[in-house]
Length: 249
Length: 132
Image (cartoon, rainbow over all chains, first blue to last red; front, side):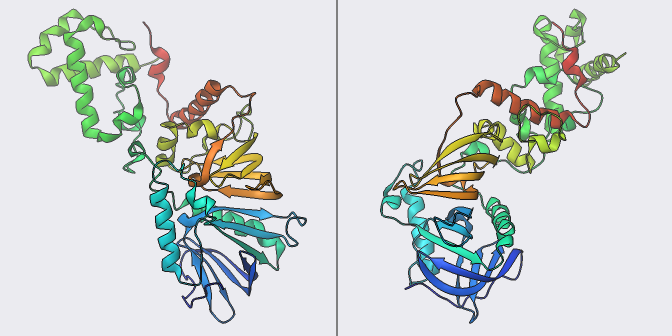
């Protein structure tokens, strides 16, 4: 049989609620109830308060089906990468976890699929026009739960908004891009770090005058004088030169 | 917005990123190529060995793919039509790139769109001034 538990439906972050929705799990009808598309989980509960919840990471795909030759009613189809038995949700979570371990090396492991460890759920609302809202709400919530194990470490973005255009001071050290291959490489630098880097680059450039390509700035030989420690001056000089270059027409 | 040729929509919509984080992730991986498929019809092979062929509505940085007007073929070859389909990145095995698409151009075009968004507010005139 199918699991039914009395876990209360989510009350917060409910993106969409659809009453009079029948749930069919692996072909077995569970009756009529209410579907809650919440940010934390997808839940369905029948009139007596019994139902089930699905965690978004376990949901493989969802779709709107209007093909009546495939299924006699228009519905929201959800494929879950887990087997929902009449044990409890913990077991389902466990199955998902096991799947994760099996598939950890690049997702090529077909074992879980060949064993058929998926559950197909169809949510049939009485109001067919609601299908799009249900679908969209699920898309939004699904996007809130990116798969943590698939990302390689490069994707680990600190979240601090870094944009080299914004971080670079207004007085226009605009030749900076010539030294940066990828802007994202700078994402580890704070604004202060950025300024320091530019100052150091400037010093380095002035000690190797010919190799320094800078937009609109001529690197004079005389600047080599500063290489032994007039750091602040060098920075100011550089900035000054930039300012000139920056004044356009 | 869906056609790669149509450059008129607002830059933010064109770039289509919902966060700086997503943009960073996308620009550092080949997902940026998949995002260039927006509006195209293609086939996505899923992890469970089913396939879904339809119009690409959106691909996000996590490779979650949204398709519309989909023909879904399950493992056993049974066909189903689906209006809208959202498959999580984790469940994507392959995405077919249409033969007519130039991959390098698509990637470069996507990156250019993204950079236009960045420069939208103020620009780096120094780029234009760069001389040998």
